[in-house]
Length: 72
Image (cartoon, rainbow, N blue to C red; front, side, top):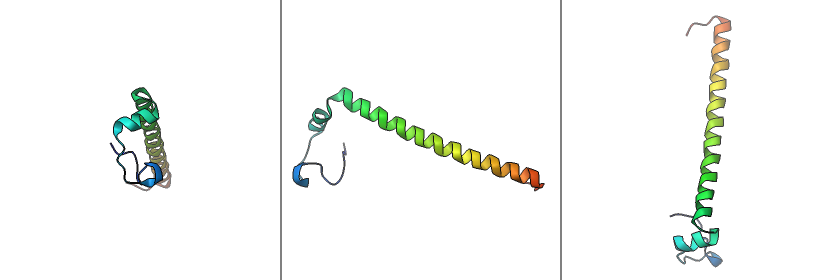
């Protein structure tokens, strides 16, 4: 499990931090799952906005071409 880089250990040392320690610091597996769902939800929302914007732009371009009489 990669948590981040540079190292998150105290004093930025290269001391290994186990997954169990990270889960304990976060607040347990339920909290870890909650964070993962939140991150996934945010990513899905970003992708949805990006796709929606792209489709909106394509629709506008199509309408302009149609109005100007340009055949595709």
